[in-house]
Length: 325
Image 1 (spheres, rainbow, N blue to C red):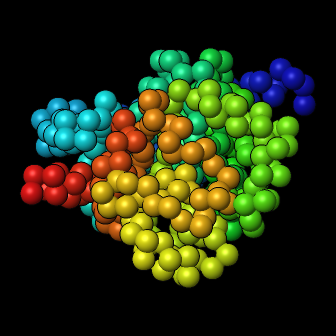
Image 2: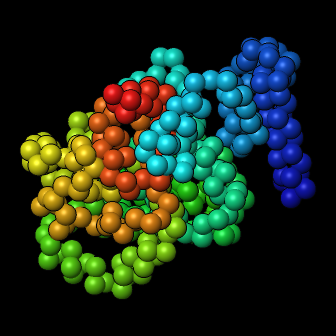
């Protein structure tokens, strides 16, 4: 097949994908009706519509100016001294971890951050929510003014939420440079940490972390078994130790009490991550929510570390009621 024929076929494919999306989202036709109009099987019409969303052809805007979410955002921003606060409206039937709502709000905010181009280096945390947020981010032109760096070790026992996945997806979505810290989240000993941090490559990545003017992080809890807990040798025993020490929240593999104060744990000397104290004075935005994380998010907010929060409506209401009480 000639190069001209290949280009023509691609143009025709893009055209039918766009037509399918237009009929469905603008024309209000069902997928069965779209299939009949295009003369294709329903399954193919479904793939065309899904493809249009993946390619970023579809932009859905909902005016929420009159909803209670904006009032929640204002109250939380004032009470916790946040410069950024986004509350995603609840989606009926969503699970305890409202990934769809969080990913939608998080990706919308993240896209605007990249469009502004105010940050040359952005530090990235870990977790299912951040992975879902980046996955929901539409492909975009190369973010020439922005590069990304993982703020913690990229090898965990749970690869479904590994920092590497988030960094890799960000690089794919934006075409920007992305830097991984190719070590476990927790090494075996303090001596191992010292040896690893003396390596030239890790020193360079650490320096790049220090250049990040924005950190986008998740917030972990002790109940779900994900995040930092899943990276530990014996998660159940570690969870018990941390709970006895008063830990309720985890950010970048480090732990906080309910009042926001750091918890000193044996894991601190083994964690391969950017110190939380080193993030103060920079923009730090957390994307987190879900019923199991209310206490953890509250503790992270009370630490004064966060300058921004993107969360779901149910979590925002719980935080608002606690603050009001």
